[in-house]
Length: 213
Image (cartoon, rainbow, N blue to C red; front, side, top):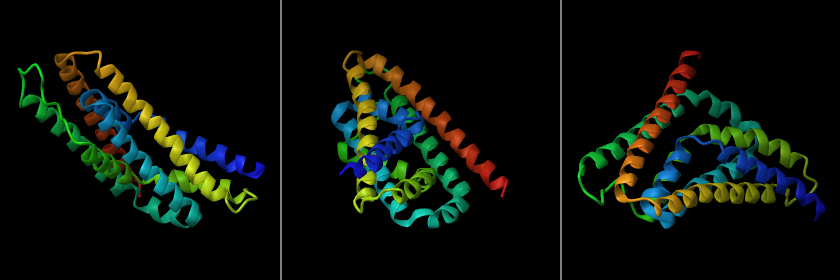
């Protein structure tokens, strides 16, 4: 039983390591909590964590065999991801512009199911998450002396990722309850601009990766 502590702690750290950097996904999660409340934000967080869990499972099962293949498509994946994130930011801005004077603006309200699907797709299109888990998963599970070690590693990574994403969604929801609709509108505009900027950075990184091949 003691041997399981190594993959459990390593998995939790791996999940937090991939989740904690505040990029486009983190900004979008905060916005979902502010605009749509905790239930929708939690569904979005579950979508992100589900991909992290699946990628961690695939990486742990296959080891380094996929690393070179995925790295070869890093540029196109990053470009696609950047375009998608920029597009979402622009759509959010357009929704806000369609209702400029309302006291209860529609700043992009969606259902919990749509939030889950959207965030699942946004996270899945980023190949760096899979490469990250490939780099860690093989090394950590290879050192485990228990057959259950890989399972514990994957489960701990998924739980840690979900806990962090849920905290972001919860922080957004808590903040959203304290502000009025006009302030929500301003935050929606600011968050959309941030998302567009982050997507542009990812897009530029993808173009740079293609240029250096």
